[in-house]
Image 1 (cartoon, rainbow, N blue to C red):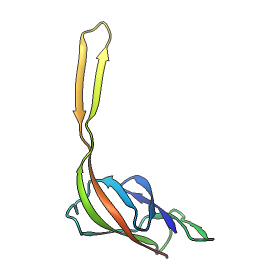
Image 2 (cartoon, rainbow, N blue to C red):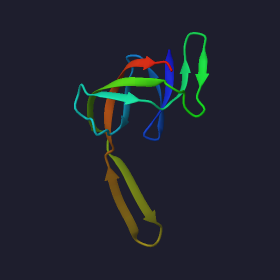
Image 3 (tube, rainbow, N blue to C red):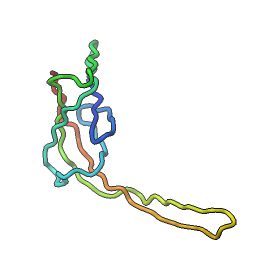
Length: 105
Protein backbone atom coordinates (compact mmCIF):
# COMPACT_ATOMS: atom_id res chain seq x y z
CA UNK A 1 0.00 0.00 0.00
CA UNK A 2 1.24 3.47 -0.85
CA UNK A 3 -0.07 7.00 -1.19
CA UNK A 4 0.91 10.06 -3.20
CA UNK A 5 0.88 13.11 -0.91
CA UNK A 6 1.12 16.84 -1.52
CA UNK A 7 3.34 18.38 1.16
CA UNK A 8 4.59 21.97 1.10
CA UNK A 9 4.10 22.24 -2.65
CA UNK A 10 5.94 18.99 -3.48
CA UNK A 11 4.54 15.54 -4.22
CA UNK A 12 5.97 12.44 -2.56
CA UNK A 13 5.29 8.72 -2.68
CA UNK A 14 4.67 7.58 0.89
CA UNK A 15 4.95 3.95 1.93
CA UNK A 16 4.88 2.57 5.45
CA UNK A 17 8.34 2.72 7.14
CA UNK A 18 9.78 4.82 4.28
CA UNK A 19 12.00 7.82 5.08
CA UNK A 20 11.25 10.99 3.09
CA UNK A 21 13.32 14.18 2.96
CA UNK A 22 11.00 17.23 2.95
CA UNK A 23 11.63 20.99 3.23
CA UNK A 24 12.31 22.25 6.77
CA UNK A 25 9.39 21.92 9.20
CA UNK A 26 8.63 23.85 12.36
CA UNK A 27 8.57 20.50 14.21
CA UNK A 28 12.27 19.66 13.93
CA UNK A 29 12.80 17.76 17.18
CA UNK A 30 13.14 13.99 16.68
CA UNK A 31 10.10 12.01 17.78
CA UNK A 32 7.50 14.68 17.05
CA UNK A 33 4.42 13.52 15.11
CA UNK A 34 3.34 15.00 11.77
CA UNK A 35 -0.07 14.47 10.15
CA UNK A 36 -0.43 14.97 6.39
CA UNK A 37 -4.01 15.18 5.15
CA UNK A 38 -3.45 16.17 1.50
CA UNK A 39 -3.51 12.68 -0.03
CA UNK A 40 -3.84 12.82 -3.82
CA UNK A 41 -3.89 9.07 -4.54
CA UNK A 42 -4.04 5.84 -2.55
CA UNK A 43 -3.21 2.38 -3.86
CA UNK A 44 -4.01 -0.83 -2.04
CA UNK A 45 -3.55 -4.40 -3.31
CA UNK A 46 -6.18 -4.17 -6.07
CA UNK A 47 -7.86 -0.82 -5.46
CA UNK A 48 -6.72 2.63 -6.62
CA UNK A 49 -8.49 5.72 -5.25
CA UNK A 50 -7.94 9.09 -6.94
CA UNK A 51 -8.68 12.34 -5.14
CA UNK A 52 -10.83 15.11 -6.54
CA UNK A 53 -8.39 16.88 -5.75
CA UNK A 54 -7.75 15.01 -2.46
CA UNK A 55 -8.98 11.71 -1.02
CA UNK A 56 -11.52 12.59 1.67
CA UNK A 57 -10.73 11.29 5.13
CA UNK A 58 -7.36 9.84 4.17
CA UNK A 59 -4.21 10.90 5.96
CA UNK A 60 -0.59 9.91 6.37
CA UNK A 61 0.99 9.83 9.83
CA UNK A 62 4.72 10.44 10.13
CA UNK A 63 7.41 10.94 12.76
CA UNK A 64 10.31 13.40 12.58
CA UNK A 65 13.71 11.70 12.49
CA UNK A 66 15.98 14.73 12.23
CA UNK A 67 16.88 17.81 10.23
CA UNK A 68 19.92 19.29 8.57
CA UNK A 69 21.35 21.06 5.54
CA UNK A 70 21.94 19.75 2.03
CA UNK A 71 25.14 20.10 0.04
CA UNK A 72 26.01 23.60 -1.10
CA UNK A 73 24.56 24.66 -4.46
CA UNK A 74 26.69 27.14 -6.42
CA UNK A 75 25.01 29.82 -8.56
CA UNK A 76 27.37 31.52 -10.99
CA UNK A 77 26.31 34.42 -13.25
CA UNK A 78 28.53 35.83 -15.96
CA UNK A 79 28.09 38.20 -18.88
CA UNK A 80 30.70 37.75 -21.56
CA UNK A 81 32.94 40.70 -22.47
CA UNK A 82 31.41 42.88 -19.71
CA UNK A 83 33.53 41.91 -16.71
CA UNK A 84 30.41 40.87 -14.78
CA UNK A 85 30.83 37.78 -12.60
CA UNK A 86 28.83 36.88 -9.49
CA UNK A 87 29.25 33.69 -7.48
CA UNK A 88 26.62 32.85 -4.89
CA UNK A 89 25.69 29.71 -3.01
CA UNK A 90 23.19 28.36 -0.51
CA UNK A 91 22.43 25.22 1.44
CA UNK A 92 18.80 24.12 1.52
CA UNK A 93 17.48 23.02 4.92
CA UNK A 94 15.52 19.78 5.19
CA UNK A 95 13.71 17.51 7.63
CA UNK A 96 13.72 13.71 7.40
CA UNK A 97 10.40 12.08 8.30
CA UNK A 98 9.50 8.41 8.64
CA UNK A 99 6.04 7.32 7.49
CA UNK A 100 4.44 5.38 10.35
CA UNK A 101 0.94 4.74 9.02
CA UNK A 102 -1.41 5.39 6.09
CA UNK A 103 -5.07 5.79 7.11
CA UNK A 104 -7.81 5.18 4.54
CA UNK A 105 -10.71 7.59 4.22
